[in-house]
Length: 175
Image 1 (spheres, one colour):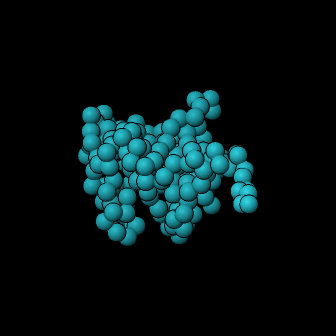
Image 2 (spheres, one colour):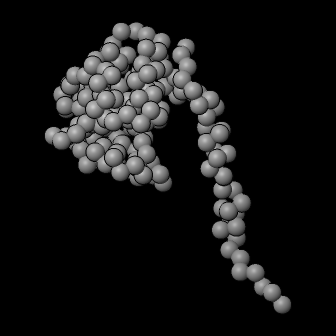
Image 3 (tube, one colour):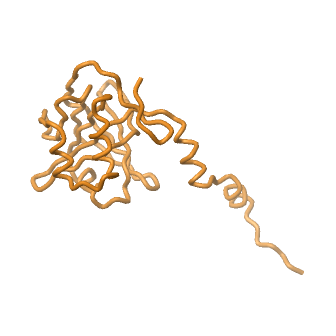
């Protein structure tokens, strides 16, 4: 007689666990604003195109941003004390592509495609971003494949009004 080793809780979890590809395909239907998250230390600058960020609180002003924790080059965000979140407009499609890594450009070349400044923390801020948040890193949570960075906003820069750059159905769009 065969007796199956059962764990009802595990069986329920396994039945409800989604296939990652189905999850990504479904998430592609959500539209997201496109930003560049940036950081710098004395030796390097790094920027990454992201679509996962939001306001957490306005007192104190706090945002969160998510990026791939599996990429060792993103360690600069985890070991640093600040980051910039640069909101992109329609005019920044080429910049979004460059910082996404799609074109395999080295980081210096990516940064050469934009004009940069600094605010209070020294994080790279895109001069013509439609909005930029200069953040002091206050907490990092590792959640599965991603790092969730919480930043207290210590300075902002509001750019010219422009149609926002949106990512949906695996492509860039504007409103």
